[in-house]
Length: 433
Image (cartoon, rainbow, N blue to C red; front, side, top):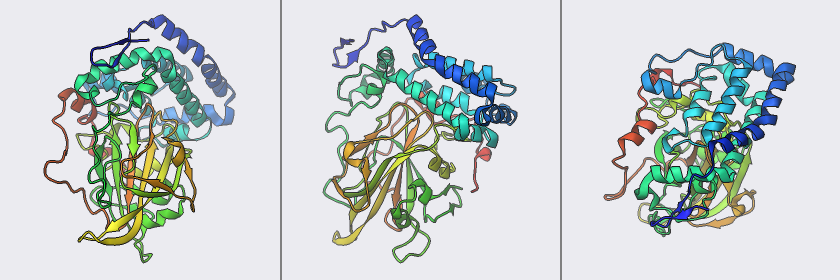
C-alpha cells in the first residue's frame, strides 16, 4: 500500500521495478504475439493479405508535422513487416507503465498512422482478424491497468495533475490505475445548475463542448462545419431515433447534436443532462476499438472536433440512454414532454462503456426515474466522448448566464498538448458522406 500524504491522497512508493514490468509484458503478451505471428503465417481469415495491403496504403509523414512533435507522435509504417507490428505492441506495453498525463494519446497516435486517410488500413483495423487482434490487445491493456503494478502510475499522475486539480476528488482505493482513472468527485464540487428547473440542461461530464450539427436528418451533410451523422446507426436502430431526425409532425429535419469530448486528465464519469425518466438504454453496442481514419485531426488548433466527420463514431463501441423529460414554455408553464439522448462513445483503446446496473439494459416499455446530475456510468482509460441529442427547436444554441464558467485560463503545457497541434491541416479533414 502507498503512504498517506498530508493532503489525504494516496501516495505510492514506485516500488515495482522496470524488470518486473518487463516480465509482466513478456508473460501476458506471449500468447498474443504468438497468435498474431501464426495468423500472419497462415493468412488466417485473410490477415496477412489485409495487413500487407494496409501497409501499401500508408501515407508519408504530413509536411506540417516537424521537429520535436514529429519525433514524439510519428511512426513510419511504410514498408513495415509483421515483426514491426509485433515489436510495436511490445514497446507499447512497456511504455504503458510510465506514461504521463500529457502522453496518453501518443502511442494511439503512432499506431493510427497506419490508417491515416488509408481505407485499407481502416479495413484492417475494423474488420476480420485485424479487429480480433485489436480486441485482444485492448483486453491486455485493460488487464495492465487493473494490475497492482499500475499503482505507481497513479502516483505519477497525482503529481503531474497537481494539488489544485486533485482537490476536487474524493480519496479512494486507487490501488490500480483504472480505479484512479474513474475517481469520484467530492460532494458539492460540481453543483447541478437549477436542479428544479427541467428546462436547464447540464454538461454530462467535464468536457470540451463543440456544437456538432443542427437540423438532423437520417443522413445529414452540414454546411459550414461539414459534419455528417447517421443518428439511426448511432442509436443502433432505436425507435427513438426518429425524434431527433424529424419534427413532431413527422417531417424530415430534426434536432441538434452536441459533442462533449473528454480529455485524458479530467473526470471520467458521466451524468444525466436532464431529469425525468430513462425510457430506453443500452451499454453493450459492439464496435471497433481502433480505426478512426483521421484520428490525428480530432484535436486541432484549440477547436476540438471542429469539422470532424461524426458519423465515424457510429462504428465504435458505445451505449445510449434516452431520457423522457418535461418541457416548459417561455413563461415557465408545462409544455408537454419530449426526449433527450445521451450517447457515450468509447474511442481508441476503450473496450466498453460502463453503465450503472439500473441503466444497463432498459427496454422499451420500461422506465427508470432519474434526476438531473445522477451518475449514469463511466469510461476507463482511453479516448471518449458523449454526444447529446435534442429534438427540433429545443436546443438552438449554447446559452450561458453571467458568472457561469465558460472555460479556464489553461496551463500552456496542457493547451499545447491537447488543443494546439498546429501541424494538422484543415484541408485534410473528411468533409463528405
